[in-house]
Length: 130
Image 1: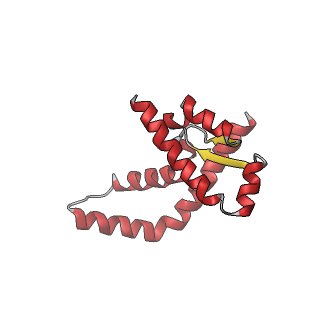
Image 2: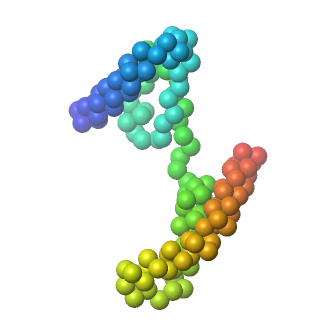
Image 3: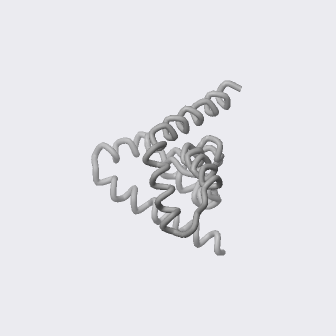
């Protein structure tokens, strides 16, 4: 019953959003033409049979995100570079930590972000082509 209640709450949330946007003619016409898509992560609640039936009844198409993979998340790449740098530093207290992180980001943030995005794109390309 816990899963059913959660599925009902989730669908209620989605339905309120649909009702809200249905007041817009463009959204309503897309809904009528089955051209409304929900992009969701892989949380178990999104796969419940009751919820999936509701999507079908409303002609909503669901697109599920790929399972989480830290290797294709640029944020994870940035944090791994920062953590690697912090391991080489002597951190005496919170203020020292803040100073070290601030200085590191001030010097390296642009380069790290560019590298992270390039790294993620290379992995995506390998996933797609293989």
